Image (cartoon, rainbow, N blue to C red):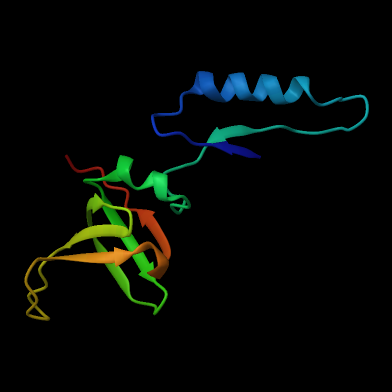
Length: 117
């Protein structure tokens, strides 16, 4: 399985083009193989810093190195880390706030899938 990603949308045509290129470099007479090319799904964790800017405005779940889980909206990215808007929590008596999370403190982050407009 080969996943591709880009700073703009990855199309089916992009996947087909890469699949044909890779298959042309492989020899079916030597090795039997199955080749699958796909774009990385939105359910996959963010792995590269360059993936954050295209997700500004989306919901995100961030797990820090000290096991803190932050669920909020990605509102900014700079050279040092990301900026999140965290919602208010009436039970904990916490107002809406913004926090900065350094890249060095991020263990994992995933875009939250939402079908709301």
